[in-house]
Image 1 (cartoon, helix red, strand yellow):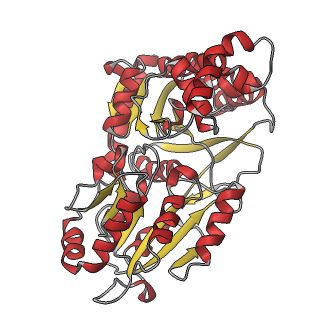
Image 2 (tube, rainbow, N blue to C red):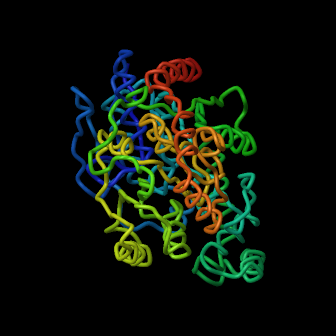
Length: 439
């Protein structure tokens, strides 16, 4: 049995939690007799990548560098969809498992698969499907219910681009009238968001099964019309279940009395991942006794402001900037820290970094939001802080640095996360359901 996975990107390009999840899922599926391949929309050459002892074929589906406004807001790009259809006709998988919804990986790709009678499954990995800001925070602060409502989403999207709330609301309200007169997005935002909302509902409606990785994302899918009959909740797992017995490299051993608290941050140089919040904490507390190790993904491709931020953090003697950690090394590296920081500024469906920390036997200090709050229990296996409150984060880290008993109690409260073999077994059941519905 063959499944073709469609993530956002693939190795050796900079990858995030979605791609690490797909990699681990492919390993788990292989143990159950399923052959996995990967298809990515890309303008770059994509090479095969080793998964354990086996290689997973990677297919590059050509995608144009430039797209029209309509394509970017849900209409899809026809040439890449045609190429994807040709790939499916040649490979004939039983299932296409979509892990991304993008201007390239669009409804047209789904329709190409459905035209060949192939069962289609979608896993909702990031808030971007239902949120133009990518965070599911209304006005950047208030948790949103995720219901696609064109005017509300249009105004919030403009606010995320830097407009004041009143201006954003006014432009959104007027955009149905200004759309025929102007080509720039702010003057067309409501019709564009409405077009995307229609595309998202076609996308979800065309799937045989939709997989949610967390309770909050399942609720978002329900609010956007996904019936319970096709919706499944399957939480994250890790390729290597259980906790590591390693205590980390010698230079990263945990802090003792009077030593600096050793903290790890693993993630993209992206606004939503909260690196700016950590920088603000350090500025607020110049005497905070911590040593912050940042393992950063995508620094060179990040927006200029964030690259400047990283340079500022390098100048702080308490910060160590590292290149991205190879996926197979992440857990071992985490084991040397007193805590892993997950200061996300938006909803996360996992995130995998929390599970990796728990596999390392290390507590998590994370934002009290989304999937992080579903995994981390306050005072048991970590601490939860308001996502944008630097003062609250500073107090939490200061308290942790001074309280050895709290550090020991949190570490003792960490339990091993589920293994990806459990996830893969559940996914095989879902694939079979989808195939039965597609027949």
